[in-house]
Image (cartoon, rainbow, N blue to C red; front, side):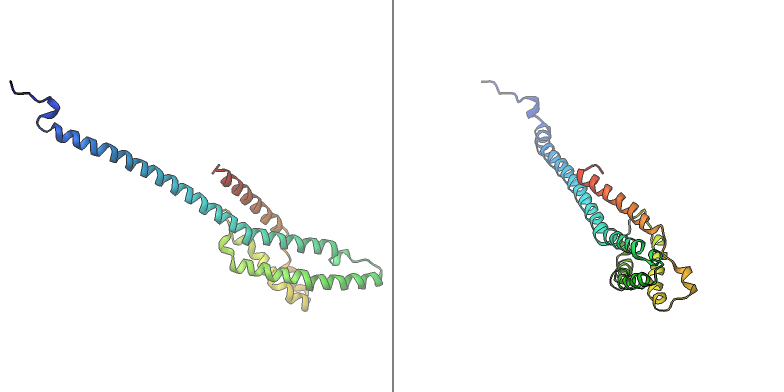
Length: 186
């Protein structure tokens, strides 16, 4: 019987090439799959971290700050000295109510606002600035002193009228961003 001649793929280096291809292609596909999965997990983890940061910014800085500024603002606009009646008897009662509101609402809120500004300013949004809160902090620091010792210098430390609106605008933007992130649109 004549010797059987091997096919071309069975001669020379071709068996080695075939074995290498059989090893390389599945491993390359597996590595590509691992790479894609890692990319997805990294992107997912970054989104989760961003969601957590914005949630913390809202819960620890903007929400409580906004709430206390609104309460103080409403208290002042509805019960402050500019609302006092002319009648001396009603004036005295209104003054006493205002003193109670200052002692039990405004000053405690001011202490908490100052604490938030002092301890949680690292949570200020990247498009916000600590500069926006310096006048507020200055007002809060002086309010109690001038409340105990009123004088004309206080006019330089009045409440910054645009701060509540500023906090509301940034807070609204953060809420919108958070909702978009949770929907996966960012």
